Image (cartoon, rainbow, N blue to C red):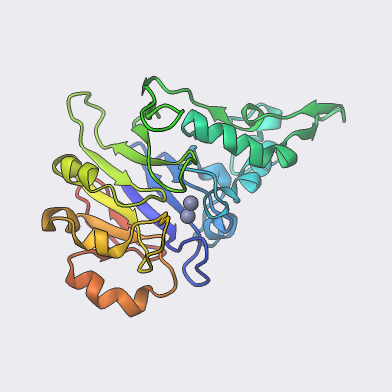
Amino acid sequence: MTLRLFGAGGAFSRNLGTTCSMITLRSGKRWLIDCGRQAPDQLHDAGYTWHDIEGQLITHVHGDHVFGLEDFAFLRFFESHNGVQSTRQGGPCPKLVAHSAVLAELWETMAPSLRYLRDEQGNQLTGTLSTYFDVLEAKTYEPPRKNWWRHSEKFACEGMEVVARESEHVPGKPSCSLEIGLYDDPKDNRIAWWSGDCTVDRDFLVANEPRTSVFFHDCTFVDYPGQVHGFFDLLSALPERVRRKVVLMHHEDDIEENRERVEAAGFRVAMPGHIYNLESGQREA
Ligand SMILES: [Zn+2]
Ligand SMILES: [Zn+2]
């Protein structure tokens, strides 16, 4: 099971590309984590089309994470490619997995584009997310804790279990980190972890380190009141056994100026095109 980063930059990076990564399961099926505004071009440049993608995971609704999704929805709906029929002609819908609170915001942002449709006879249709995607429902969930939405939701994605868990990004905003189950065996709870965008939750990272092969964490070197990302000083205060498993991503364009101290602290630095083996947590390419 591998994860390939298409973009490794944050919202305002001009050099490293917005967030979109591809998980390849043992079955060969491909899922994306987030679909930022540059995702359509990133996929194309890497030699993939939307028709190569089985499903899409979404952490939260910010442009650098979801603004590529309209392209995904429309191209799969209208175009057939490589033996995969268009959704409009009865082809398979790509699967979509997001926490229900995120899903509601996703529709708010996409409705003006996706609501208006015509069928092959030219009749007007009203599109919903389910017109374009097979929206999976959570099979279990934990009740709300801090915010009004469920603390976590667990999804079965054919060969991959994913927990979308409430995380602290912009206060009050539905946003999740992802626990990606590495094995089908329900007794084996080992995961790879993806922060989405969030502040450093030291207790969670320390408690979950033993079962986690790799933590992908967003990172910033600038602190400010109301911090919304993983501030480097807090990340570097994590125990070494955690730091050794952390790959920093969602960079600002100052990452190279900071690389030396980042690597000295035991962190790895994700770059566009890097591929990680999720079981070992090690970089493959
Ligand atoms: Zn972001
Ligand atoms: Zn964000």
